[in-house]
Image (cartoon, rainbow, N blue to C red; front, side, top):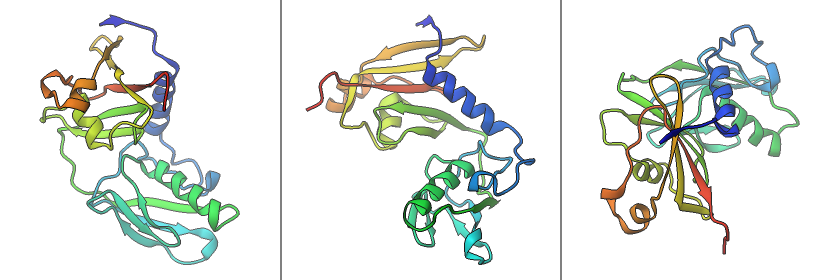
Length: 214
């Protein structure tokens, strides 16, 4: 692997993560119609309980819980997936759904009130490009985490993905970002687990597109 200039997608991700770690307590709860929280970078997990309110309804907040499948049940919308999302990104998703079908511009208040137990062996990998679910994936750092395994467990590749062009970006201890292109065609299509590539906490995985899709 060789040192390289981070791509725009990686630079954009760094900016998003930096914002997520910032203290947002000075922003009014209704800023942008989405409740702002100081704990925005932490991904929601099964067992987390949240307070949810649509200001325009005039009703008191209700409590909702992320179930074992990463879903929450909401008024009007029914089941909504919170998998891989933070409080703020979940708020934005809910608002977009409500504004599309039920409100001109809904004002939400969503706040974590009880967090399920976390362990210190949790890590994060970011998936991007031609995958079913783009975003942060939490991993157990004590397990054997590989590119094929993580991608499949998070929903797999999209119809336009090229399994032969998967790029992994990794930051070494000096802070330099390095990359490698891996071919997971044999792994994902033929079950050649011996050819799978290990992933580590903080890795950024980008799946390329096929040149022709039909």
